Amino acid sequence: MKTLYSITIIAILSFLGMQGYWLYGQYSYSLIDYEHNLAEQIVKSVDSYNEIRKSKNENDIDYIPLTGEYEIDLPTFSLSLQYGDPTKITRTTTIRTYRFTSHELSVVDSGIPLTRELIDKATELAQLKLKVPTDSVIYDVTGAKNENDVWIATNNIQTERQNPFDAAGLDSILNKTGISAHISLAKTDSIIWESKIDYCGSAFNPRLSVSIPYSQLEGKTAVIECKVNPFDVLPRMWLTLIISVIISTFLIVCLVLQFSTVLKLSRLDEMRNRFITTMIHELKRPISTLKMCVSGLDNERMLEDRSVRKELLTESRKALDNLSAYFSKLRDITFNNVEQIPLNVQNVNLHDLFDTVVQATVQPSGKNVIIHNDIASDTIVSADRAHLYNILNNLVENAVKYSGPEVKINAMASVKEDFIEFMLADNGNGIPASDLKHIFKRFYRGKASSGELPGMGLGLSYVKLLVEAHGGDISVYSFEGRGTCFTIKLPQ
Image (cartoon, rainbow, N blue to C red; front, side):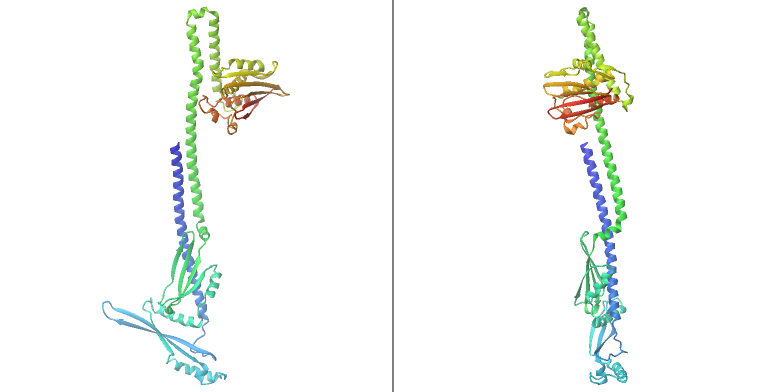
């Protein structure tokens, strides 16, 4: 049983471990999917913010502002080929910057208002001024996938100069989508063309970091870092969790029930073996008596003595009565309910019946047994005499068996209006409180009686069965080490 118990525990723990590992894998997969979607939302939010920045640009070479400095950035693409093995392709872009003011083009002092005629003249002169840039910067854009990426990067420079990237502006857009993040702006010496997504932290403390270039040619990048709440991931796998819990509970319950069934079968087998052993032990005593009496009856010299012959016959009758009572007990405990037990109810003198029980009680060697019959001599009870005898006999035998060397037993009875109350008290070992609620169960043997003392655990269950068959009730009051008192109430 210990091996089976250990195997069952190992099987349950192994199953829970495998189930936990599988759930962890499902959680990791759901977490990656959640972080991927979150990264896409962040990238879309950055794109939306860049579109807002671009829409604010009102710089157009066809429009010259009335006041302030006007700046125009125009790109020029070039492609060079160096022949060799292999052929090297180099792509560059040049950003030419033109700066001027409307008053400067009109050769008018800055404090003088411009007329419509002066504005038209300034616009014409601006077209000519674009031929001579104020400065120019050449960028190596060989790493770009195509010319469209170069064009977007060039426009981003103009957007950044007119409307610089602001972390607070992006944060407001992220908040509208329900994303809380920490935004920092970084600048590198190299050109960054693509966004970078990093999944940081552990499975239970995940973090997401997204680096998005907003001015590629200048190496300017926005780094958005946000923590991922695991409880936002779990709802995505609620169906998996429910199915897993149901299957796990079902399998664990099956294992526990299986172990419980095997344990019950083992206990039944143990009780069966104990029952057979005890039954053999109980039957050996009357059978041995009968064998001895039969041997005596075969001796003619012993039969000539009338007193010896009478004693042999008396002992034979007692042995047969014991066998009959024992088999009656075995028959009665097989009934499913008390109504099936046959009763031959008659008026029985309880005092005389208890005296008969006392006379039949065997006093073990080494014990001094004193039994007081304090039942009134005229106490009459309506009951089945044989069953009532068995009830009293079982209680007295238990009181003698589970006691010390000095045994004192007191029997009392009182007649009430509609029932008789019988009490049997002893100074024995007593019954532990943990055993009191189980002592009337079949085959139950408490700690005090499960040692060397023989028994099947049927005596008190048999007593309770017979008392209930008479429509009565039995109760027990005991202190461990001080004694026990059984109370039986039989209706009249």
